[in-house]
Length: 240
Length: 247
Ligand SMILES: Nc1ncnc2c1ncn2[C@@H]1O[C@H](COP(=O)(O)OP(=O)(O)O)[C@@H](O)[C@H]1O
Ligand SMILES: [Mg+2]
Image 1 (cartoon, rainbow over the protein chains, first blue to last red):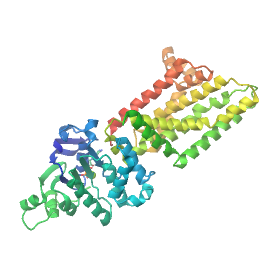
Image 2 (tube, rainbow over the protein chains, first blue to last red):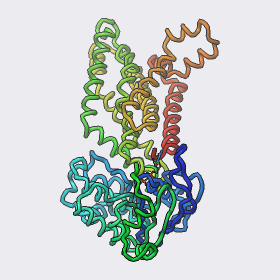
Image 3 (cartoon, rainbow over the protein chains, first blue to last red):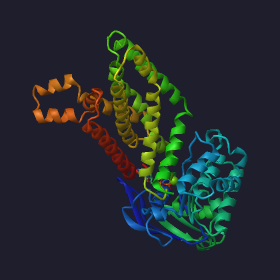
Image 4 (cartoon, chains in turn red, cyan):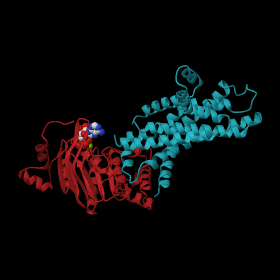
């Protein structure tokens, strides 16, 4: 569904992504785990075509690179920063994007999404009045308007309360169950352990280890958890 | 969904958004107040025994230097600041439709402001018998000038996420585009610069073409000038967004 092969990307002297490869299959939740500055968002930006890699290739659904608009039709992005129009209501935000995507029966689709993220009651309120958790849920709904095959969710639970977090995790699992491929970046290990079919641990732009959570745990000894594995691999020194 | 429909979606969202902030009201009040002030007091609207709107239109370029950047500054800088540009860039089509839609919305907004000055026209008609054709052409010239400045401003707005920077860049650029046709500047240059350079500068100035249209005739060269300026800056706008993407 999504394949990144040997991607490299530098910003001046900073090597953000350094030979990263991974694949995500249909109906799979792939967790991209790494400390701040590991290169997760850069990898996502490359997967969406927002950034062009210095070298390496990206393939979406076997259709080729996301630099082609037709390929992007199958891609939904929820960036790390909330990307909604504060001056519009929840409904207006989704309607705007649905119109641009050329979604049919927009009102029904928007209703369905608002229900899915449990924001129906606040549909007519401006986003500027929303809490962090509500904005996150709406941000996720915005990535879904055109019912894409592949979803890229960059830290979709950053800054939300446990209720919203739970709802988002449930949603992600549900979406995967309906056959969507999902890339999920986070640095919360318990989240990753809960919802990811496979995870890749990245640091300094490199993939340190890939596999299912069970495989990773097995490789690092019985009495361990994902957090310990993560800290062992990425080191305990503080990050940016 | 074709390009026209997408442009229309963006146009409507953008045009509406002008009226959801106090900006629109503030802009309209300032525009109408200054246009009137300049025309009546400084331009001596009543003291000239001539019923036309020359003094009124003469100040438009200088008004636009400050007012157009206020409209154009947010067009793209705001999308960059809020990060919505990332969603826009991942839409399954190029940004041209969005650039055009936003530009047209901004242009429609300034045209509404301009249209609200129609009592001036009524006033001169009542005071005398003006050349209505000339006034119409002057309105057209003013709208074209605003369009050219807006295209320039939209392009500059796409280079930054800071609206204040977008405003200042646009005001300076518009000012330069006017000054290069200002008689005093050209006279100064004529003293030492090669003639071709001075004439080239004058004919690339928005002021030269604006004043040419003020004479009341539509010269194809003037219309072409404004059209080309608008297209050129919108093309640059598209390139700038593609080039800078999510930064
Ligand atoms: N646009 C950019 N310009 C310069 N450096 C950048 C840019 N984007 C990311 N970086 C740098 O690249 C590295 C990886 O960043 P990022 O991909 O955002 O990491 P993560 O999402 O894992 O926290 C960091 O060192 C960051 O400072
Ligand atoms: Mg990140």
